[in-house]
Figure 1 (cartoon, rainbow, N blue to C red):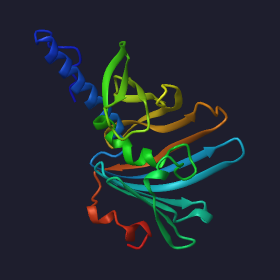
Figure 2 (figure 1 turned 90 degrees about the horizontal axis):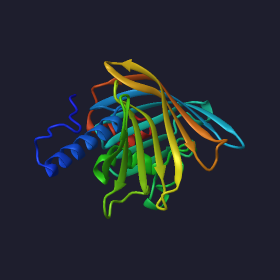
Figure 3 (figure 1 turned 135 degrees about the vertical axis):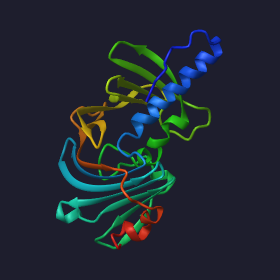
Length: 245
């Protein structure tokens, strides 16, 4: 992908600003979709650490485009089969012990997903950040860009500001910072263990850090990623959520 930031100086100033904005938006879209592509299947290990307990999960997930996502817990045994389905802006959880599907209402979108420091809202909105925010370049050096995202007027988002630190070569995120409506830093996500998988260079480890609780964190490690797998829209159904293929 060719990126033309701050080039074409012969263009009028307004045109150059629009070009830069479009490229920044494309950069953010690229890094937000790095783990999914057109379609994907992954195996993930997630460790959640709080001030009182630690939890380790093994999961399998599938995605199709920006609107469909399914994840199912494989281990530990007591939580095996617990699953989450996202279709467009709707999210459902399945609890196998009681054989119950629960739709997540808008009032619970800010709640923790799988007991982690990731929210239900993250699952719904993450792939649409390039649509809900306007971006500007805060700084640039030879190795990286720092890009600020501010929500568009009336955008249905919970963050007052998002700041990305992106490595240029290869293009991968290093750090993403999330600010509340009062512009107070609330959460950081750090990306490490950069490797090439299926021709894509991506960070395989993501660490979510709640700023107000420095003793807590959620670590997600991608153990297997397969892109461009054969998935149809019909796969992402409530029947599949229950594991009934």
